[in-house]
Length: 419
Ligand code: 13P
Ligand code: SF4
Image (tube, rainbow, N blue to C red; front, side, top):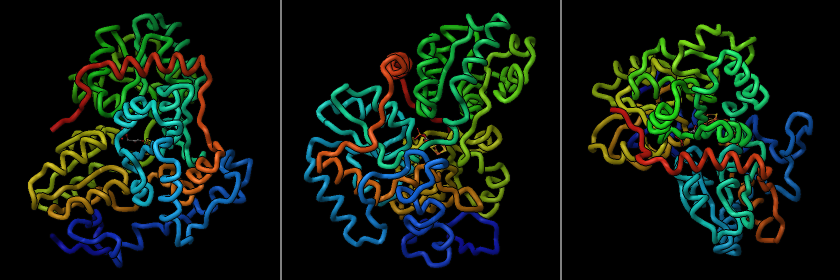
């Protein structure tokens, strides 16, 4: 493995190292567990800027040496009454307590598959917890350990904007032949809009199958809210051209597109993106190929088209993990996804060289908000009989969102991987 230094603009070398013991790179990679910009979460938060962040009761100090023991004890007290889901982007300190880890699709399935659990504690972000609430029984409560764990991509599509877009499509005479497909990373209200209008949810695991299904139902797709996943799937999996895709910008009148453009397009892409995956560039791929001979580049489909089309393998977090686990020892992988997962890949694959496909730190800030103090606080509260941070979706929204989620869950062939 080449020794890479900070003077070189490089992906971070992980493999073969104990990342927790890294010296120089360690300082840049690993924010101290809680005290970052996110440090005051749950304490003394400004109610105007961080609504819902304050935790009732005492949030444990990040420095409490007994946090692991406290989480273990609270989980044991709850027993089968609690089931903990952990998304792959969660911190290690949280993942350790997950009963199951997975990508968005697997976690949605797992939430629905545990009716025995009174509490589903979702270590992920808000839209995932909403979907879990929709897919679980009314007798079950879904808990998000920190209410500030949102998603900037989901926030890029507000329901009033999407309703206004649909009216634009109606006025252009194309709503009847357009099928909405919404990425899991969206609010329950957007999923409900999708269900009401004959569409389905998709995840990065089944975007191809969802789009194929949509084009069996209609002539066009309105893809919300991630333009990149929509474009990548349409062009690289379904063989549409880039010209078949237009971007609808909700900040501009009529989306910034003409009626003629709307009528000509096959894919109408919402102008949303993931702020983490948007950081990866085609230049970073060229750089890593130059610096690590024979490296395989694997990226998440939320990356931009030019990144995905220059990668060797593209897939959801679950696909990325499985692909690297199955790779030959000695192979090198540059990974374009969230840094908590890349670090874990390096730990779990010491026989391979794992490098991070970005020049700078690239954690998902909102995923990182769920830390051990918040998990301990949530579990101890539940064990003490206090239901905290419950995520609920109103019945009408939940009904229609479930229609869209069920359409996804019933689609055959759910795995999307390109290589
Ligand atoms: P998956 O885990 O479904 O690949 O999604 C990635 C993501 O960005 C979740 O927020
Ligand atoms: Fe949202 Fe991107 Fe973070 Fe996923 S990684 S939660 S899409 S901001």
